[in-house]
Image (cartoon, rainbow, N blue to C red; front, side):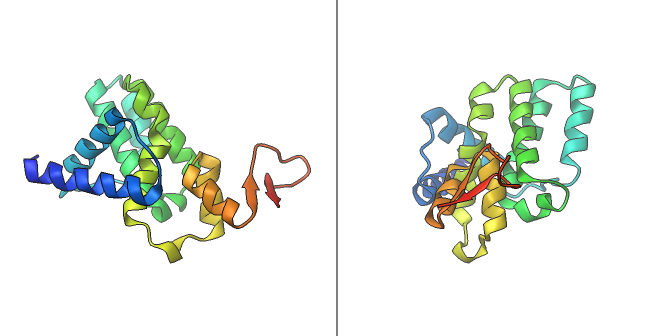
Length: 171
């Protein structure tokens, strides 16, 4: 990683923070900048994330391998959401990423997974691409920006579901 690559990544993260309106701690902002810089120009293996993480956990892989898989999960959730959604929900992959960061003893990153994802996705977000189903999936995974987007449409996602089959309420 070169200083110019890190500067590009840092500018990207700052733009994402501004566009998404999601604040990050200094630690998470620095971590996200370094992580993004590491993946600039690298081949990202989005496919079979669940299996690769499970195999790493089962084999007691070193923490740096586990962290690398968590980073891949974060970037996949931010940039390859449609591809991931073919095999499951974003909630699954967010939980997988959080659990993987936790297994690597990166608690702040585990709790900050969704805000970091929102920042990265916010930097490249195309307004017309967000359909309601995708917003609902992200909101159920804990995305504050998705919840705000649904609130603009007078939709609230919650843990209830007894009366409504999907846990949705329209205001």
